[in-house]
Amino acid sequence: MFNIKEFKNRLWIQWVCYLLLLLTLFMILVLSAGIFMRASSDANIVTLDELAEMAGEQEFDCILVLGAGLRADGTPSPMLSDRVDTAVSIYNSGLCDKIIMSGDHTGSYNEVAAMKQQAMDASVAGRDVFLDHKGYSTYESVWRAKEVFGAKRILIVSQEYHLYRAVYIADQLGIEAVGVSSDCRVYAGSVGREAREVLARFKDMYLAARRAAPDTEVIPVSLDSNGNLT
Image (cartoon, rainbow, N blue to C red; front, side, top):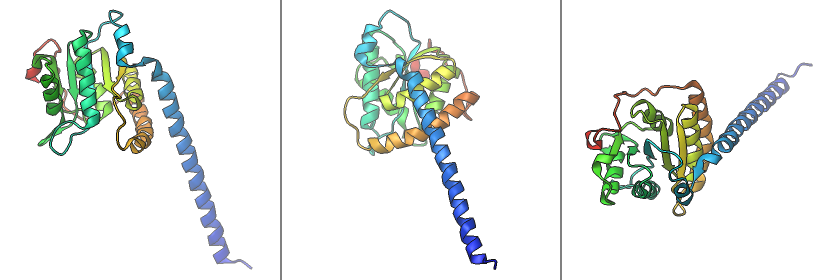
């Protein structure tokens, strides 16, 4: 005799198995994308000391500093502060004399202004610091470095775990990029960031493959102009 309850139970189990299979396949795809991204970008990620050894080998249009959030008082977070300090060290070395601070400026939240102020407090000339107020994501920051500022060879400054994605995006967009690690300490919440980065790599691999243009205003800015004008 046909048992409707037993049939429903079997059907439910089948659907659960299908969903688990799809989830497993998706995670394999996501993890594989991340592994590929790391492998393809690893050779172009260096420390400050390694960067110094490259002096004279090639010229760079700018140093791109990626945003990483502000404290409650409006000053750069520890991660962001270390990124800015690393960019200042590169600037002072004479390897590159233009810095793009790229981050979120929404209303009173002004990440890029805080980044610029820290650099200027460290004696960087204000005219050499350019602000990208619409760097809402890593992909947008790299895309806008090329499309807004016309940069073709860049130094990207961030923590190492983040650089694999940023350098990969740059390469896919036709930008010659070297990532410079700004890991100066142990940062709180690193496990959560690494977990989010797995999905972010998959998302940005898709965007980079499409050469997707962000939905933000594009007004070209010359890196030969005065940074205070941006």
